[in-house]
Length: 106
Image (cartoon, rainbow, N blue to C red; front, top):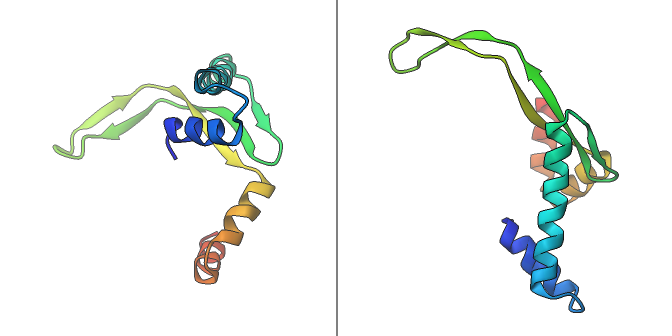
């Protein structure tokens, strides 16, 4: 689902709000999550999951085209961990063969 599809779905399910209001609400939520992550804070949405940032240390990488070693600077990356309820809802929708394969992979 894209951001515009999310906005359209919310607008349909909330006819008392204008499309512009729904767009503003979605943009505000995403902006607040982004700002909190930029400050290094954790954002937890109960039943959905948690957004955090993880520090990646500097390392020596490899250029896949030439095989040459290249330095990779340390960086901070966003990370999402799905909550138990979300995992359960996703797994209910998956065929049994996919659930077995997912459990086998870890």
